[in-house]
Amino acid sequence: MDDSAALWLRRYHPAGNSGVRLVCFPHAGGSASFYHPVSAVHSAVADVIALQYPGRQDRRHEPCITDIGVLADRITELLLTQSEKPTLFFGHSMGAVLAFETAWRLEQKGQGAPRAIIASGRRAPATTRPETVHERDDDGIIAELKLLNGTAPGLLGDDEILKMAMPAIRGDYQAIETYRCDPEDRAVRCPITVLTGDSDPRTTLEEAAAWERHTEGAFRLEVFPGGHFFLASQQAAVNGQISRELEKIGKS
Image 1 (tube, rainbow, N blue to C red):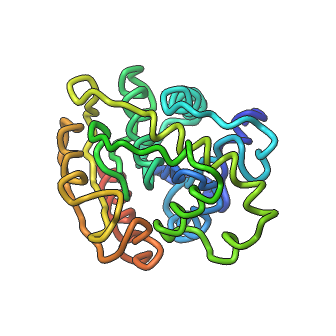
Image 2: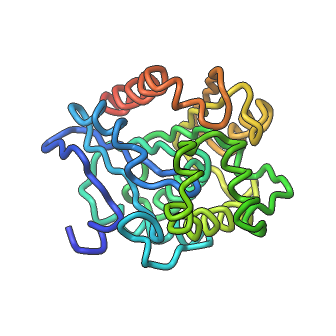
């Protein structure tokens, strides 16, 4: 693996000669390490890759990419350097959109496309809301993080850590809030499973169900108790969904 791929593609539990692959796309402000527990669960059967976007953790000195299209282009290039395996994409929140856009690009290239996508905690790509969190001051962004309840309370009170993390958080919010998708132009051939929380303040059930317009394959919607980060309290159930899809693509 070249240095560029090593920066982006993190394997916390290398799986050797596994027959399938799981690629995990983090949420806005998130990092590859968010998926360390997911990797631990599935590495016995899958080559688990967690993406590390620029601008966070050990890449915090690199500029953030504030355009979903540019970010998807770069990830597409990197995934094309990997060996061919039946692959499942899993993305949460911004990561769900990024997984979708990357899958679409790989399908257009006719190489490396996933066999299935799990889109978690995000409304369908073509649904829009007038959101401008990235234009707020730091306190305004912190208020949004508290609303979504996906950041450890201790970190929200640590000025030094917040100062380091804020450029990545703001940059990711800019990327996802300025993203636009034409439903007539963007549909993947692979099936999509959508996971959503029943009290997510940023995704209604109708908005989650609208993902069906973006696939020519099978569609399934699973609703869990909880808010935007329902997967934190529903880890076993979410991992069950991932296992189900990995088993399915391994047999296809």
